[in-house]
Length: 354
Image (cartoon, rainbow, N blue to C red; front, side, top):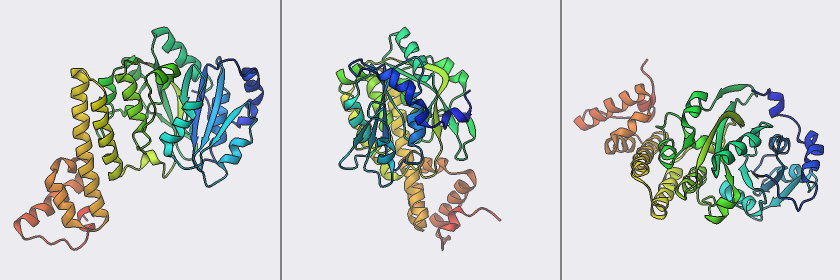
């Protein structure tokens, strides 16, 4: 595994190599990196550094500024235009919209979406493209290194043996790996690369109405459109944990939007029996997640009777709570049903036993 110094290297140090790669813009690059950036001035250099330091492939880097309120646009524009193409959106379009703007400009044979607070290791794209092209696949994924906020490496997102065993991900596999709060390994964290022509021919783009789950719908749609997804089990993508990251804060309205997107997906694409069964399981997980988040919302709003009502309507949602809280909720609910219980404060539902 590469050292953290590689992950945090200054992008400017890679300018010379990138100039050699991109000399003569008429040559189609192997890879287009699309970096959607919003208030990312502190991390954008790191993302760009990883993109332009790729070994064994030619790259273009497209940074799409999604109406940032900090110096993100200045950071991106500090690079020569033959190194980094910068797009400044006139209005905020969210992560999906910003990525779509980049995809529409991409010229590479392959496209790789890179979050503006993450990084990639130097041999990532060469290894993924080699594996995909050897298999005749249109999509490839790899393992993800997790890095804590203090910059120290954590575990990889997936055990190496798990990804080695997968080899290829089917639509059913992928849906089963995206059961909300339930999947053992959340395949939604995978960072796929796509054959650009495959995306264009099948008119595949991100759902701009989604702020969470847009990655899932795109890859699921690609698989449902006949794309094959191979697995490169080595680590190539570096995921940096950041407090307040959109992907770490799931709220009720997100689940409702995901449910609508799933309904549209089911109407648009045929599924075999395995995928249909997985889709039904995901639907149940979304309904349970919705009930759970509604329950949490009522607790936070100090509306305990509404919280108990939500729990009684869908008892399975309580399973997402820690066991002491679940036991307390059941105990208080039983008291209310018997008419002998009174809840004076929402904290009564979540306070631990003394």
